[in-house]
Image (tube, rainbow, N blue to C red):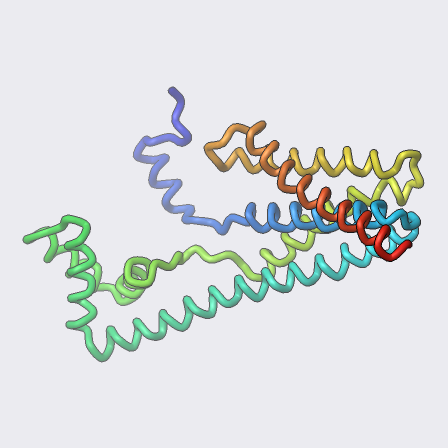
Length: 241
């Protein structure tokens, strides 16, 4: 069986020297799925209400820009909040190691003891970690607070979400922009393909098979579309649009 990476001494050293890089897959999936779902929900709702294609384009394009920016801004703010919290706690630990190093060293000892270190090995590990202040603080941030030191860039996260929202969200509108025949059916088919493709692609970083992940995402998007179409149709009958 072929392993995911080489376990030779040189290969391990090279991989560890490269460090960990932020991963923006979740930001893209978040924006892509929401973009296609919300835009097609508008399409389905307007078609269900038997309104004109112009209404679809106006509402759809407004959604692409406004909702896409809103999601990107929210993701940016949320990611920045995590970075701010990390910086705050780093200052807390820096102050604690200065004012009460014995107490902080005891925290390191108890954390390592919970990992089954004991005796001389435990003493040496505590001494090694507390001998370097940055290593000490990093250790406490990860082990005491459960934080990750590998945090993504807020700007990159926001732009990734916005790009995915625009790309995937524009697809349901294309048949109407091109004034195609049976535009709604074509839009539904293209949107379904987007849902399935996003699910299939994200399976590369999961244990689920590509087709199962694709179907799962397709069903989530399809449910949103059915709800929107039904509400539009009901409101049309209620208000006699």
